[in-house]
Image (tube, rainbow, N blue to C red; front, top):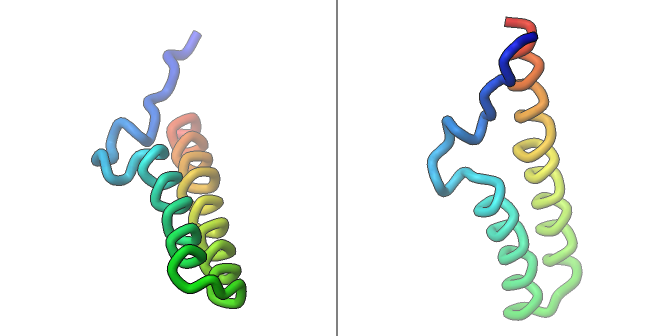
Length: 71
């Protein structure tokens, strides 16, 4: 049986952990809406956060996991 592979998050600093990515991603569109109350500014920011989350919380860890299992 193979040992469980190490998580990508063990190599990342505190400001690049899932909780900090999620909190920052929630704060950006929230602050935009609270300060500006313009959906046409807040909506693209929220969409950008969604892409950022998909990239850093889904795709990068998945690629790292695949690389660890194939290495």
